[in-house]
Image (cartoon, rainbow, N blue to C red):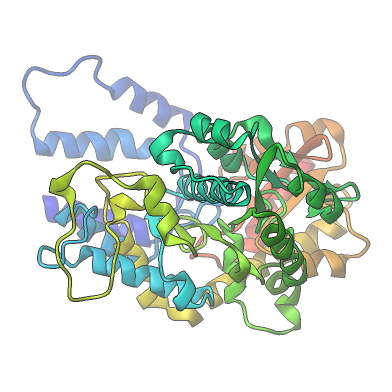
Length: 493
């Protein structure tokens, strides 16, 4: 029975998704009604649990990562190699927290996977073969701002000729008070909500995430305003780059922009962090005119102090998986070290100097989330991931091409020409209906078809709809036909 269940699940995960992208109201109601109101005194047995989950719970799941037409929330799928590896992870249930070379290979595999990721993104291993795997981009942004917080306060202390202990040791208020500072600010343009959340968690404060955008372009930095903020003597600053804005997929900077920002950060002792949850994948594209604008937008990330990335988006590995790169690994140890636990100390090692993950990240006990990444990278290689991304971009551009010419839709952001719009398109499509009444319900009407799923959002103060293409199953011709059929159907109805 157990083997049959596993084979069935494998077919579901890797086969064609024939049911609706969203569960029916009946299946949702039946699933909710099946949930026990109290814990039974006596267990029901494995077979009963399996049947309950498969027959009652699973039909109320959405297509999510399984359907190629689930375009909400930048939801990746799970590649065959990653699915296999994730089953191994569950079966062996390794705890990846301490680097113990004579006990397990898991920390070596994680370290190797980080190096493979650096190779994929064309980051020099001599500077970037460090970091950690996290639960996602939110956790990685917390790590980036936490390391940045430590760095900028240390820089301020050096400038004042003072010696202070780390925030992790002394506390944020005590260090700020000792340095005569009123706080820390994060300077960005259209930052993702997870960056604002990270600022709130770390005591920086959501209100101290400042928009430093040009008035005529909300993504681009106003460099004069940026320098004025960096020059303040009452606050220290972290600069956060949106490497792939969440609604449009567009980039905030080019390599030339980042060089100027890097120079300003060095001048004023600021930390430079990139939220590259999905934008970092632009670096895997080949040089050439077809993807030149996207490639240019992702260049310069090697100038960062830290980089956030998401595994469960364009890398197409299971939830929950993010990654974090940092050029200053000692800072992470100062912030996240698991002190006063001798029983968690690493043993002697004859291999590479691999830090224990519990000392450079949030968690102590950790799932072996690096193994699906490792497996999928080996399975696809650079060329495989590049081909996948090219298909995703081709579909996004095909949808935009159709929307631009449609009499009932408006492609966003508004651009001077279709050629310019397509040239800037990465893997997101943003649009609205021309009819205000329809536009206010557009995403709901699209999702009600259950043939595809989109996210409702806002742009220029009005409702908008976003299609985010990130699944490895993308088939440009098939999916473009489905999307245009649904959008036409919604307008006609």
